[in-house]
Structure formats: structure tokens, C-alpha cells
Amino acid sequence: MNLGKLGQALSAREIFELIQAELDLVERRITAESVASVDAVTAIGQYLQSSGGKRLRPSLLILAAKLVDGERFVPGATAIQLGAVVEMIHAATLVHDDVIDAAETRRGRPSSNVKWGNHTCVLAGDWLYMQAFQIALRERNFQILDLLIGLTQMMVEGELLQLERIGRIDVTEADCMELVDRKTACLFSVCARLGALAGRADVQAQEKLGEYAWNLGMAFQLVDDVLDFTAREKTLGKPVGGDLREGKVTLPLVYALECATASERRLVETILRERSYDGVPFARILALLEKYRGIQRVKERAQAFTEKARQVIAEFPDSPYQRALLTVTDLITERDH
Image (cartoon, rainbow, N blue to C red; front, side):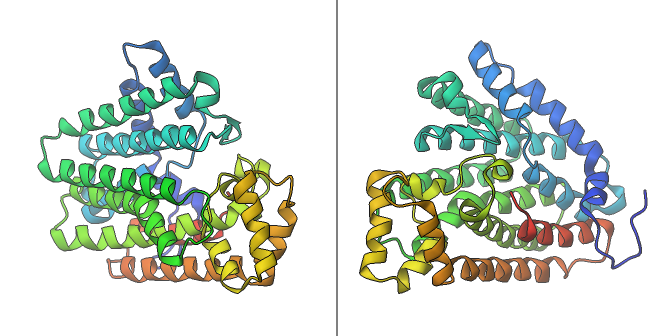
């Protein structure tokens, strides 16, 4: 494997090569652990797994474990188990999100709630959560459970806060950042912390990796909020402009609304009320975002979080895994889906 010279950034392909063996084991573990005594739950789990996804969360966990354990790292049971845990928790949140949002597509395919119905999917999401905790419990490590319980509570509270703000135009920048923290950044942070635990890192390294991944998660979600307005539907895997159609005012629009006129605000209020772009074309909202630099300002915020993540990971000794985590920050910011 050619990993280049020390100090050089790695390509996405080289990063995948670094952790491919472990990711394959995580994939097999998810397959084995997603079998339930009720066929519908098994079918939903398999459907979610086969739909692809970036596997970014287990990748972060494995890279963190390899970073702190260096060349001594062997694809250990703990890292593989925890990689499956975080991906299953992520899958459970997606199932619940699609039910709450009444989504119709996910990753370019019909969402699970469209295929199986809301009632079945809510219960399947619950099962996936509990199965993830069942796997984590086998490690007999209270620190792991403490991280996962705190994470789950944060994410559920984030969903509840988002529901309270649906349809409201008076959402603030602070409101948006709180949701980004609770719904995305906290999961990234826990993934890196769990990887550090699996790699037997000291407390300082655990905290540093958690800080790195939290900033990475903040950048990731802010880029997501931008892509919801700017990506092509085929690339995004779901309809563009979906957040606003669902009644969610995200940060690009918050920034634009700070400067918008009363008539421009009424355009947004119409969409929030009607939950469609029939009365106000999507192009009008894009023009509003362009006019007041809403998208550009969010990109700048995302870049600031990315830079902070880079500063934190740069404090670790140079290695292929450290360079991989540095490169991940660029892949997050520059992605198109």
C-alpha cells in the first residue's frame, strides 16, 4: 500500500484502504446483529444497510482507534463491535427522522416508512436502538454505556426541539447551532471518543479526538444544510429544498432573513404555511439566499469548524491515520452530497 511521504495528505481511496478490512468486519457484524425474530425488523435493517451510505461514523471510530494505538492496532473485537453500534444507532435515527418528516426518499430510494409504514418503522427504529445497546453492553464498560446513553438523550432532545420549531420563521442562529450540535456533532464526537477508548488512549487523547470530531460534525451538518438548497436531486438522493418544505428554517435561510424585506419574509412564510413550492417557486428562495449571502456565510462557518478540527488533529504525531483524519476534514467540506 502506497501511503505517500510523511506529512502528505491522503486521497479518499487511500483512506479507505487504511480501514477497508475493519469496515468489512463492521459490515458483517451489522448484518449478523440486524436479524430479529420479527421478519419486518430484519427486512428494514437489511434494506437500510443495502442502501449504502458513507459509513463515516464507523470510519471515524476506527481511524481514531488506529491513531492512538498506531501500528500495534489489530482489528480488535471492541472497535468492530462499536463500529457496528454507532452505525446502527445512526440507522435508527434515520428511520425515526423519516417517519417524523414524512419523507418519501432516502439515498435515492423509497424511504423505509414508505415501504413498511410509520407504525412498523417506529418500532423497528426502537429495536435497532436497543440492539445497538445490547452489543455495547457486551463490552462490560460503563464509560462506553455512559457515552451512548448521553448521546441518545442529546439526539432525542434535538428532535423534540426541532419539532417545536417546525413552521416557525423566528428561528435564530443560536437555535440552528444547538440543533446541529445535538443532532449531528455529538454523534461524531462520541464515535471518535469510542475509537479512542477501543485504542486504549488516555483521557487527554480521548478529549482531543472528541473535540476534533465535534468540530467535524458541526461542519458536516452545515454543509448538509447548504446542499439541501444547492445540490442536484439525483446527487443528494432526496428532493432539494426539502428542509423548508418540511417547515424547517435552517442556517442559510436564517442569515438571509436577517436582511430580508417584509415582502421577502412573506415568501418564506407562505412556504412554511403551505409546505410546498406551489405558491412560491424554489428559485425565488435560491435568489433570496444569493442576494443576502446566506449560503456563503454558512460555508464560511463550516470552514471555520473545519479549520478548528484540523488544528486539533494536527497536535497528534504524524502517521497515516493522522493524515487520514486531516484529509477527512477536506472531504467533508468539499463534498456534493
